[in-house]
Image (cartoon, rainbow, N blue to C red; front, top):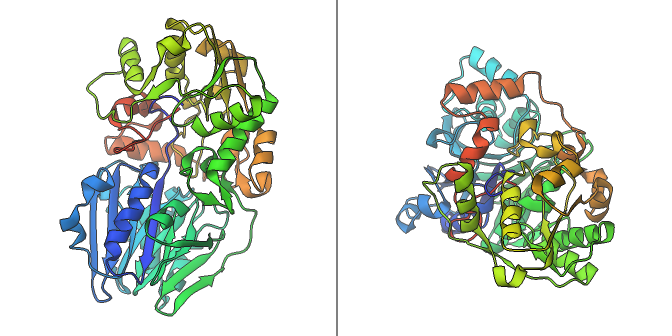
Length: 498
């Protein structure tokens, strides 16, 4: 994918119940979900009579230290890491949100994007609601606080019945930790059992880190209550066709996570095998664009019999840079992050494997560098279909202008990148590999088939809100992201865009 111009996730969430030093476990869980958001992090805990909250900007390790963890007592709590897909990157938008309502302290963390934000917020503001943030997540907190129900789980049901779109949420209220997933299950959520209690998280890798065994995925439309008597489940909403984000399998989820009983690592290898069957090409070696293409490249090499080589070296320690986005300086930044081994690649026919192309600008520079060191042929294989449509459910490529495949054919993209050949895995073959395929997953970013239609004017409203608070709209942020985010892998785990 292109440097730091990749699709960005919305957030990661975790909750723990019944474990002494819950904050320490939440810290570890958030660390394992750092790939889902690096702009801010937060933890809320409770001792039963008091709620404690700390939020900050930056990575989990920057926001929390042992002294701060020590100020968050209690055996239950929730945590959140954020990347801003709706609302600016600022402390006021960091989660979990905590407020005093008539029902008592209430904390909420949210992963996903609502698609009826504009109308809900306008209605709440007409009724006198005061918003402290610019994110859709705070709407859920307001709706819960206004509920007349006495039980917190009923407040959640009443609130969620009014929202539409993508949400997996964790709630800390009334001494309970509650997780809920929208009826289509856009964003993931899993349930685990710890030695003394229970846990919920965006991905199973977080359960591993907090010492919890994976029990199961939380079903679309399900609300799970962790309390003194154990775990309860509610399914208050009508059943609809599920639409989990297929890009979780392709890119977002950590490869050591498990979805639907299937290893993400194995799925990515199989996607590589499938495109090797679909689009074989003679070559001397298969080379991943690390780290995003590594697992698909292993599968491609295994299926094709062409040797797998790590001939492009990833620098995991690239941090913030003063370099500005001039074309001649982009080459320097590309080399800082990915440097090919000249003596090994010179004169060779190479198949580059990656998991997607979004804008294509940095891929083009990478190919130019390979040509300049004497690579004889450069072929590229992408382990998913072309991204042609924006996402409304929590992935940060809302503008079609950010997607090269929305305006160019595969052949035009090949020419733009200066490749000898380019092939994407077909939608049909991709869905054949993913368990449940088109029956259980949302593939709108490839197909344009949206499970839930956003309300009219939502995109324009979001852009106007961003501009009013001094934030550039998404379509003008892309080049700036290259220089505003840290590396996605290694100690500083920042995102990258394709």
